[in-house]
Length: 241
Figure 1: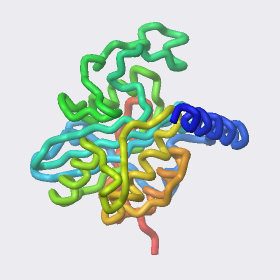
Figure 2 (figure 1 turned 90 degrees about the vertical axis):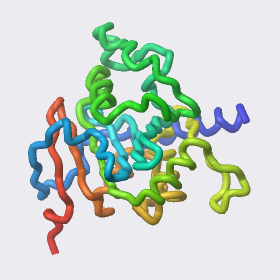
Figure 3 (figure 1 turned 90 degrees about the horizontal axis):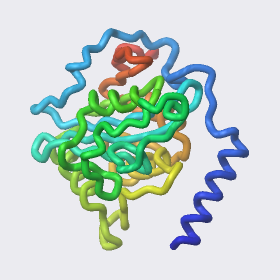
Figure 4 (figure 1 turned 180 degrees about the vertical axis):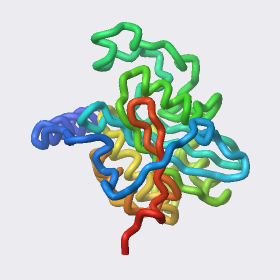
């Protein structure tokens, strides 16, 4: 298993070197230029107790995509946050680009939360709390794709993310634990395998390639965080026939 994981990491590093990882001219780069944004109130990001929702987040640092995470709100079971191969709520101080220049960014905030297999199911951070942490570690932009889902869809996704699946499951074994650099791949594979009735996506490696697909999968709303400013877009109002 260790040799397999090492091989996967080496393969990913090789792909990254060959492709120059993922550098873009602007951020968030996949937002259609014809879409018009509207001001968004941070309070609107809080959970609505009457509506189950799936949020897929793609993060950017300046001109490169950096991370993908997923948050689920199930009206009957509550929220759940999946941070595949991420650093949120870990016991290791953040040592990213911002921390190298300013030790205040090596934050201990939210480290008291408990992760299990990259999932937080108790004291789950709100979208606002997660964006606050992303701001602390110098994230410049976040795309939040919002999908309104039924309670039964939310309950099924909640069970899969909370407990994983065994080989006997109709769609095979699944674990939320991810190895480094595979956040985008992990979320894309999860959506492809278990959320095809909500959003159909192909399995891709880079976060920005997942974002590119999600813009074309009719999310109920796309919320953009850009340098501490929030705006939102309603796809149905922007589609051009």
